[in-house]
Image 1 (spheres, rainbow, N blue to C red):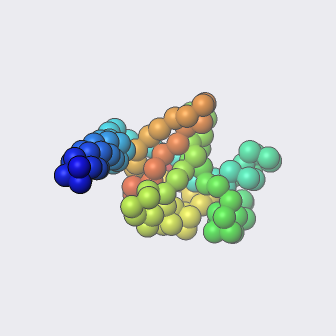
Image 2 (cartoon, rainbow, N blue to C red):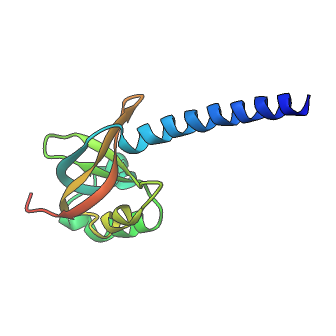
Length: 128
């Protein structure tokens, strides 16, 4: 009886581990990364007041460093919510330093319920 219970427990654990690897493996490697150019904006000021550009740069940096959500506004008017990787958020933190500036941002693009987002993998200043 004990062997049967152990076999069932082992089988359940094996299946659960397989499902975990499938889900998390797909998250990490599921989609190719894209590079998008635009201005990093703080979502609070941009959405509420359309605040952006060089004259808003100091405020944008304060806002994102203070915890406001951050976005990438492209030249063609697309707005992406930026978010950190669960495994390494250093590129996202680097993006905060570039709030109010034009950048080339690379990461995995996603969309849910009409909101487009990019998991920030790298970011660098851009000429536009």
